[in-house]
Length: 321
Image (tube, rainbow, N blue to C red; front, side, top):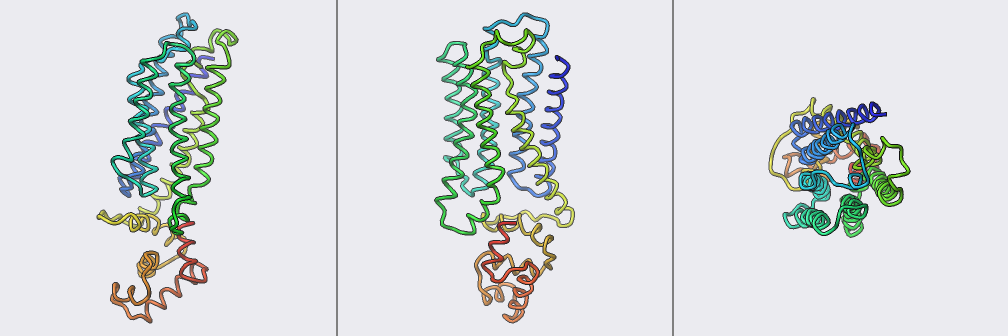
């Protein structure tokens, strides 16, 4: 069974390292910050998994008692790694929600780190200390999910809400998997005494959570699929780096995919971009130095190619795509 966990851990490390590398390459291609943060998440998770792996390897031929089962190895190192990892998760969410600010970013990350320090410093080694220490991870994620839902419900901007709706499925799946992670920790740490397991198993259950591994694999698949789409588009178009507003940035990120899916010309994409920004035909004509009739023709062609009836319909379709 030692070999099973060995190859299982090796496969998990390969997935994390590969995903981090793909995310890094995607960031270099499109300069979207979320991919840089995603690379950090998987790289840091690989670091923590490696630490667990070497700890298990070193303890394979040594007796494993109850005190060691509830011990948290290298707590300072682990707290630093997970705090940075959670910071990367939070940065991705704030970037997607257009809510990035120093205070909004640092407050939950610092609270998480301090809660870990307090648990390590104030509680004696035992099941409750270990359970609380790992449960702070899930509580942080539940806070992230709640913040996403709060931001969505609070917004009155239909385009903004439509854009966020694209993340409903992955957010729901990750929330369910996070709940499963919490349930597994509760059963393994609090509900099942070490004595009921075979002699070899407590070593591998002490600091592992298989549901958490499943969660990371799901996120890896989701990230790689999106990264491949971005890289395939960027092979056709060279990204331009410039200072733009949040709405401009999101339009520019989405436009290559939408243009490719509906066969829009370069000029039609320019017109659509201004339509998405809420400009009327005269304003579009002035900005692109075109006749109003030409703009109307481009808008008509856009509606035909996207199979939409009105400008509002094409805006909703753009953000849903």
